[in-house]
Length: 233
Ligand SMILES: Nc1ncnc2c1ncn2[C@@H]1O[C@H](COP(=O)(O)OP(=O)(O)OP(=O)(O)O)[C@@H](O)[C@H]1O
Ligand SMILES: [Mg+2]
Image (cartoon, rainbow, N blue to C red; front, side):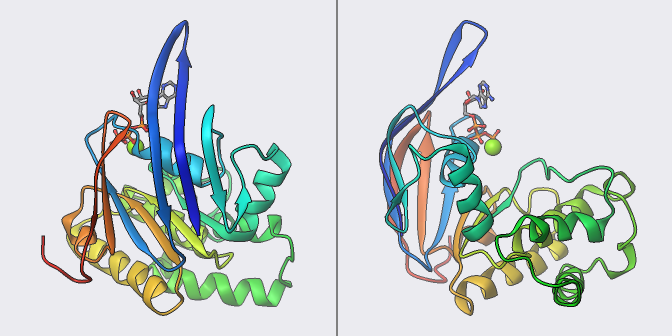
C-alpha cells in the first residue's frame, strides 16, 4: 500500500522556486496498475521520484507498506529502494562503462540478500531474453539504440523482483511492436506476480489496461478515475 497525503515538492532553480507538486493525495493498493497522465512539466516524474524514494517532499507524507518514507534518512531510503522498488527512468540512467549484462546485474549486487553468481546469471539471462536483447549482451549503452537502452533499463528495474515498479514513459522510445512486447511483460508482472505498477505515460495502449488513471495538471491531480479493467479509451 502506498499512501500520499497533501504532498508538496518545490525545486530551487537559482533563486527561483518551482512548485512542481502542490498538494497530492492518493493511495495505491498492492497489485494496482496505476497510470499517471498529464502535460509536459505537470509533475509526473517528480511524483514518481518521490514514491520511488529517490527524493523527499517538503510537506505532506508518503508511506509505503505502513512505513513513513517522506521523513526517512537517505540510508533507509536506499534500503527500501533495494528491497521493494524497481524504477524505469525516463532517461534510462544506464551506467556507460558497464555492458548490458553488468548494467542489469548492478542492482543485484546492491541487494540486501545478494543471490549467488549462478542464480544471478540465470535471472539476468532470462530477463535479457524476455526483453529481446540476447544478441547485445556485451554491448555498452552507447552502442545501442534508444529502444534497446529502454529495454535494458526495464530488465534492470525487474532484476531484484520488486513489489512496486515505477516506470517513467517506458514505451516512449519504442516502435509499436516493441512497445507491445514491453506492455505484455508489464501486464504479466502485474497480473501474475501481483507487482504494483505506477506508470507515467501518454500511451493509450498502456492506459487501457490500467485499473486507475490519475491526471495531473500543474502539480495537482485533476481527476482520479477508477477504470474497469481492459476498457477501451
Ligand atoms: N531538478 C529540477 N530542478 C528544478 N526544477 C525542476 C527539476 N525537476 C523538475 N523541475 C520542474 O518541475 C516541474 C515538474 O517537472 P517534471 O519533470 O515532474 O514534469 P513531467 O510531468 O515529468 O514532464 P515530462 O512529461 O516533460 O517528463 C517542471 O516545471 C520542471 O521544470
Ligand atoms: Mg517526466
